[in-house]
Amino acid sequence: MTPADYTPVDVLVVGAGNAAANAALAAHEAGASVAMLETAPQEARGGNSAFTGGAFRFVYSGVDDLLALAPDIKELDLSTIDFGTYTDGQYFDDMGRLTEYRCDPDLTDVLIANSYQSALWLRKHGVRFQPALGRQAFKVEGKFKFWGGLACHILGGGAQLVPTLHAALEHAGVPVLYDTTAYALLHGDARVQGVRVRHRGRSFDLRAKSVVLACGGFESNPEMRARYLGPNWDLAKVRGTRFNQGYGHRMAIDIGAAVAGHWSGAHAVQWDMNAPPYGDLSIGDRFQKHNYPFGVLVNARGQRFLDEGLDFHSYTYAKYGHEVLRQPGLFAWQVFDQKIVHLLREEYRIARITKETANTLEELASKLTGVDTASVLDTLRAYNAAPRPDVAFNPNVHDGLRTFGLPVDKTNWAQKLDAPPFHAYGVTTGVTFTFGGLKVTTGAQVEDTSGAPIPGLYAAGEIVGGLYYHNYGSGTGLVAGVTFGRIAGTGAAASARG
Image 1 (spheres, rainbow, N blue to C red):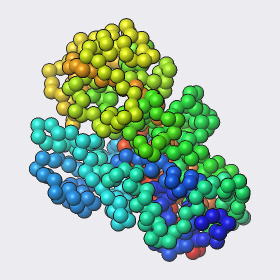
Image 2 (cartoon, helix red, strand yellow):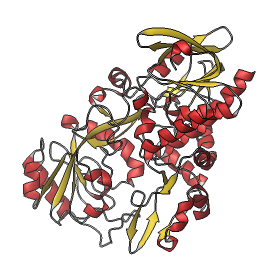
Image 3 (cartoon, rainbow, N blue to C red):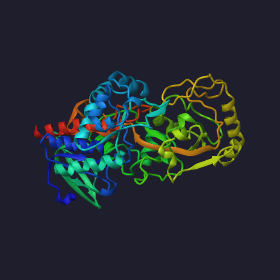
Image 4 (cartoon, helix red, strand yellow):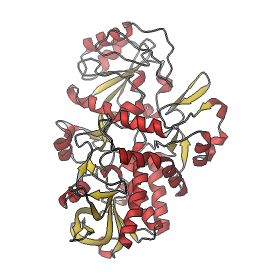
C-alpha cells in the first residue's frame, strides 16, 4: 500500500515500533479503522524497537506472576533461583532516584500501575518472555539471585518483538505505509485532521479523525543532538535506527504543542568504539558493553574518571555513556582480569569487537590505542594497591568491596586486577533515545502551550517527555511504549467516534 492508495481512517498512527504497533492494535480493538506510517523501508521497520535487548521492567509479587507471563519458568529448578519481588513502591523509588525526583508523578503512576498488565497484553499478542538469567542474576554458591527489578526479558529481543507485533497487525488487517515520512500535521479550527507525508519525492495529504505520534526521539539527527544535547553530541554514534529524525517533535510544536522532559538529556551507553554510525540490525544491541561495574574504565590520559561500582549496570549504564563523551577523544577502555571473564555477557564475545588481551598489565598498557601508556600503568597499579575491606566479591548484591584513597574510589565489586590474561574493550558513546518530548496528559493526549489537550492528537513512546531526566532504569522504555501506546490508541479511537 502507498499513500496514493490511502483512504481516510479513524486513527492514523505515525511510526511502526513498539509504541506505534500497540497503539494501532488498541485502536483496532476499540473498533476504529486504523492505518500506520513508517518512514523506513519494510526491512528496516520498527525504529529503536528493532534493536532492543528486550528488558521489561514491571511490578511482580512473586514467581506466580512470572509463571502467568512465562509458563516455561516452571521447567527450571526453582529451588536454585531467587526471583524476589518488585513492588510498585520499589519502582517509584527507582524512578525518583534515577531522575533526581523530576519525573512527572502522574505519568509515572500510570506507567507503574499498568506495567504488569502491559506485559500480559504483549503475551496476548504473541510476544514471549524468558527469565533474565545471566543478565540480571548471576549464579553464586549454586543459586541465582535477581537484582534490579528485571526478572524477565522479551524472548529474542527486538528481533522477535517487531515481527511478532507486525504479524498481529497483519492479522488485524491494519495496513502499514512504508517509505512514508510524515512531516506536518493537518490541523483545522477544531482538531487535527491527518498528516502531510512525503513518499518517494511526492507529497500527499492523508486524512484521519485522530493521529497518534509514536515516531521516536530525535537521536538520529546530528543537528538536533548538537542543538539540544550540546557540543560533540553530533559526533556520538547512534545505537539504533537512523530514521528517528525528530519530525514528530517538529510538526507537533509547529501547531502549538507543549514540550516536556529533559531536552538536553538522553539515554546513552558505552558502545564499541568502532561500531558504525548507526545501528546494524545484524548485530542488534551487541555493540553495547555493560559489564563495566566488574572492571575499571580508563580514558586517553590513562585515568579512571567514574565510580564503575556505583550501582548495578541497570541503574548507571544510560548515564555513563555521557561520561565517556566528556573524555578526550570521546573514548575509553574497559579493563578486566580473568576472574571476571565468566561473568561477561555475550556482547563481549561477538566477532566485530574492539578488544586487546595481554598476560601482564605492562603489555596491556602498551596495547591500548590512544592511551598514555605510562599513566594508565600507574593508574592500574594504584588501583590494585588501594586498601580494601576483607569482604567477598558478590555480583548479585552491593558487596561493599571498595577501594579507599584513590582520586575516584570504586564503591562495589573492586576486585584487584591480578589474574592474567587481562582483557580490554574499547568503547565510545552510543545514543539510544532522547529524553525531551511532547507534554501529554495521563490519557496520552498532546497538550498545547496553554495546557489544553489538542483534539485528535495523541502521543506514545520515546516522543513523550516527562518520564526521564538525567538517567534511566533499564527496561522502562518498552513498558512505557506499551502502556501509553495502548492508552493513546484507545483514546484516539474514542476521539474519532466523538
